[in-house]
Length: 469
Image (cartoon, rainbow, N blue to C red; front, side, top):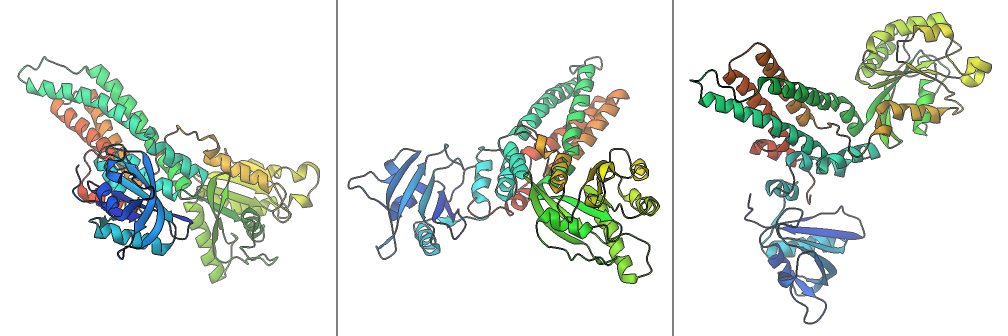
């Protein structure tokens, strides 16, 4: 899509030593030429320079005085980020210098860019598909190694390439089915091999299902993995929270029921952001306020991806069994770590494992670990275990994990359409009905790539970008 106007924006955050002003559009180089003077006498203007070159000179103000000495990078269409003629002016990071440079560019015929407008032009000019464009915003917002790796993989087209290959195969068979409809008066004709279509639909549904199923983990890694610290009163939950965070976030007391509400904070461990939630101790009580805190504890467990069950060895196994019976219904589908706290007070094998009766009551798949939150014993072991439970330590640069709710919804609908295709093939449904479900599946896959996306959707997506990107 050809753009008629030329846009400009400050592309760097304020306060840095260096600032960059971006310009893109048909008159980008000409506009920059109006305000730029090369330092070397007789040096050619920007309009006569090749793309991929850098010029040194000055930017002139409205009064003819020098605003700053700058480096100007020239990019010629289509070899630029946006696919248009572009210029990037590198100057000192002074807010005044950047604003004056913008003012001169606007006077030279440019328009101030809106949020995400450079990336939107890159998408519209075919430099990237929509899923890659959305990954640009995720890459900018990435606060840890896991989020960065997932965004980078998507931006490089790992997600798009697989979907496009899948869509092309489905499209070929859809075209053959459409051809059959053109010869509907010859019912014996079948251009699309039904066995091949059935096998392809099965494989596609499996792959789409795998991608959709990865959303829960991907969304948690992107936004921070929620971890609920749960236990009986005075089991050491607040002490463990402080140990994991490395600061005194929660009040610690020997008095039962000190924590009446959930306390939440984040920490980056092994390149993954965790959102730790310290909960009120769970016990039977007639205290109205404490009961409210316990209700919030259960809600925190329901929202958590990982639950740390803190076991106090000074409490009887019977009291823990009563506590566990109340908690267990909320643990379905969670990663559970049973942590034996206060192991410093135990000796021998007792300090390294849960009491046998407690361990026997745990659901299958529960991980166990011994630690001392008070003295920091084996806290690093718990940190390593938490990272391993997210799967981030095995995540490679080529792994495709869905982190975008729009992509997840489109994949879910595509999978539902494929399920109908398979049912239609199994029940010998008329070709036109099967073809309609195939077209719907293709539509949802194309929506992820931006091939059928409406202007309203594009406006919504790019409005969340920062200005200058």
